Length: 115
Image 1 (cartoon, rainbow, N blue to C red):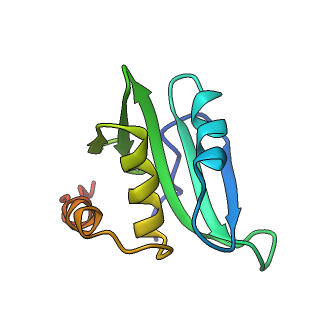
Image 2 (image 1 turned 90 degrees about the horizontal axis):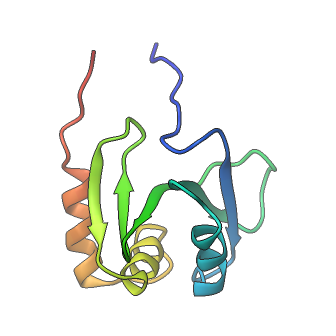
Image 3 (image 1 turned 30 degrees about the horizontal axis):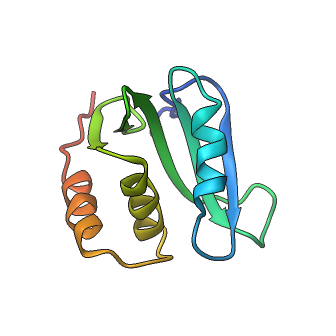
């Protein structure tokens, strides 16, 4: 059985409940109020209070946004906030974006390390 997974940024996961496209306001509020990075779980509006969703670990660094994996490896850097919004909405299935499809494929192919 796998060990429990820790999150790269602190002990808190910020839930973003959405019935459709995640908005700039929803993410901007979380990203602007986090020092050193934040872990976000985007999930559907309705369901069990402990439901899962799509996890993103993001750190803002000098105007760019670094996405990390659960084990802390760098996965991708978004050059601007608009790319963050597009990537999150694409991955969550809210809005297809061909450029973000390419980025998601890259992130999905990162070799996992097992100890």
